[in-house]
Amino acid sequence: MKLKILVGTMTSTAEYVAQAIQMDCADLVSEIEVELMDGLDIGVFNAAQAEDAIYLICTSTYGSGDVPDNARALYESLGAQPRFLGHVHYGVMALGDRTYLQTFCFGGKKFDERLQDLGARRIGEVWCHDASSGTLPESEGTEWCHQWLTRALDAIHASQAMV
Image (cartoon, rainbow, N blue to C red; front, side, top):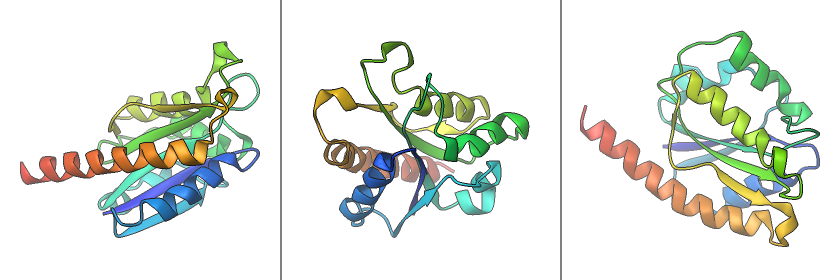
């Protein structure tokens, strides 16, 4: 099983989180691939690639609750080119700042909503990091991801055993 981390970022913070996860969680899966969302579209979730993968959307929030510029094409393609994504297992790490309460972590929450609308199966809850908390998203994110990935692998293996 492979973990594919799709990164939406404006200031590289989400990319740093993904790289920390890549180092910290390498013992849990056969491969961890970090890919910036630049130029991606819904095709990144094709069935052949998703068969042996778990996806992790790791994205910040920008402006008035928008997805980062580099994630816009992927996000918009989920609405413009909809297709059933029931074969996709995923999680979401949303980075935000609680001082903007009305739009806190909306970048990740928007991706989650679109993926669920297309039938993708989220494992666990959306993890939200608050930049105003004074904690490092890399530290908290790797700790969360280690627990999430362990549970995700167990859930996927259990569902495959039932087939």
